Length: 298
Image (cartoon, rainbow, N blue to C red; front, top):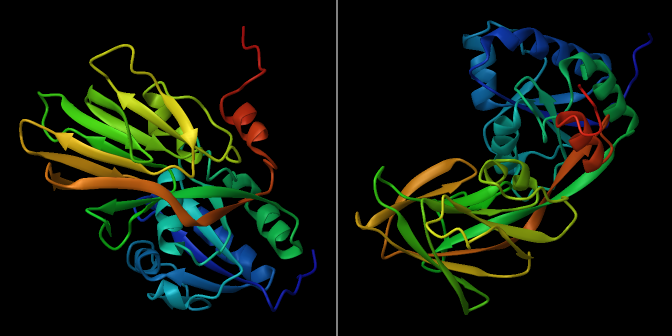
């Protein structure tokens, strides 16, 4: 097959740094990017892993540490959905669409099989793909953005910090009292996150384009407290009571401990994450493939 030239297209590559056995996939990706003449950037942490742990030659690529300086057409995430979430956090509001090469497990976000790497890179070079636009949550603590990365593509979770006692989570929606969750915790999920932690706590599956947020309690003390879906333009204010005077907040798996004096606010961010779809052109295709819907295995 003749080499296709795409001098104007560039990608930035992110990846899982704990999968030594999957190194052959990285080689295939780098070779395909070179064959289709992409300019390739690599995240500094991932580049160090490729060089030091896998002894791969990445001299044809540019290593980047300051992600705010990247002006790339695409981002490629190599790993599972967890790696995809980390990639989305790095991309932030830069507006770079992300494609996920799935070297993990189920893969709702990272849904390109390693067997389809060459076809996927070719599709990028020809701009033959679909785009799903995914909303993002922003977390504020006491009226200020939480740490340096206050954004969640999947979910924000309020969790007890000990193994014994339930916590009480007073929840207000748009400055109106809603309810007090007495539970192990509360998950505030985007439609993207509806197939993650929220789903494991019996939350509903939500289409990415539904413009909604789901509040899913974790092991609530009252069975009447069920998952609740609201519009994503709402503001959710949370205050927590705990016997230990602290609790955990998890933003896409990035956890920190907060004092019960802290007031947490969750709202939709001003930016979105664009997810590239090649084989699965829409969310229904992904569900049918990943969850085997419509397949009778009897």
